Length: 317
Ligand SMILES: Cc1cc2nc3c(=O)[nH]c(=O)nc-3n(C[C@H](O)[C@H](O)[C@H](O)COP(=O)(O)OP(=O)(O)OC[C@H]3O[C@@H](n4cnc5c(N)ncnc54)[C@H](O)[C@@H]3O)c2cc1C
Image 1 (cartoon, rainbow, N blue to C red):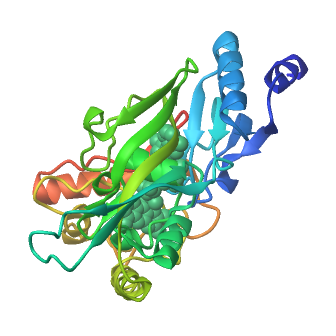
Image 2 (cartoon, helix red, strand yellow):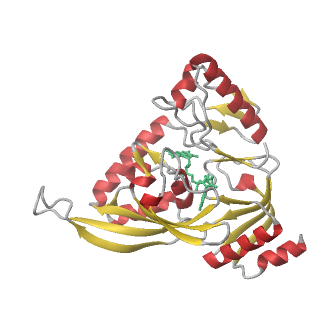
Image 3 (tube, rainbow, N blue to C red):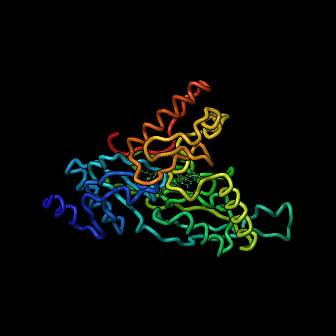
């Protein structure tokens, strides 16, 4: 281990933690230790540890806020990477758009392009946009996690998805190559960016429009109220567990299969929103998986539909 630590530290700015409990890095508070967890502070440090990981045959797992993840009780073999230090937001371009010219010669819209580091919490980005009078993100209010995770998952709610604002995404491959992908080179779809599995998102450029901060704030409050009404935001969860099947809602199917309130160990199917499973304290990944399997089977029996997980499962289960 000492030899590995020595190699990982070469040309590396940031923190390295060994046997790091992943339960401290997931919203579910579930997950055994990662062999090594690295918090690089710049792209060069990231590239250097990726080289060591390759040389040493270490599997690489990248984490955002851990709000869509279920990590094995056995933990993670290899290297877990957090890019939370990649936390800057900068306006890179602002222009007056002609979008409204034909409708109304008087009114002018301003587009802005923001550079957003993958470690920026989505909530912080939405707040930045509100303060500066940029609209486009309000419907994503209440989605936890970081920018990198939101882009990778194409996070969305109330009809808006990350892809609606993306201009381009900067990634580093696990080989250490830096690549900028324009939006038309990405295959965004429901809860996926279509990025190759070996992509580490460093940042994204997004395009927003100018609006009055008060109007933006009003919409944020409305979306937050709607989300609070329908989702158990207070408990330890990972958001929706299963993907919505085409033309249906996983939550509705789970509810119709009478699974609300079902329990396995300390994990419960939420009584507020059936597609949320809540860790009631000290729950294990294996109980979580057992409950997922029981719910899937009950839904299959009642509707003939086999639900597919939306959460990402990491490590051996
Ligand atoms: C209470 C609650 C409410 C939620 N509501 C919603 C909702 O309304 N809509 C919605 O879409 N989701 C929702 N979610 C799920 C989750 O918050 C989103 O999917 C979020 O965007 C995930 O971001 P994260 O940073 O936590 O990613 P993580 O959970 O850390 O990772 C998710 C996936 O993205 C990958 N990833 C993360 N960062 C990077 C990176 N920099 N480069 C490459 N890959 C990366 C990970 O490897 C993993 O496969 C909710 C979750 C909770 C707990």
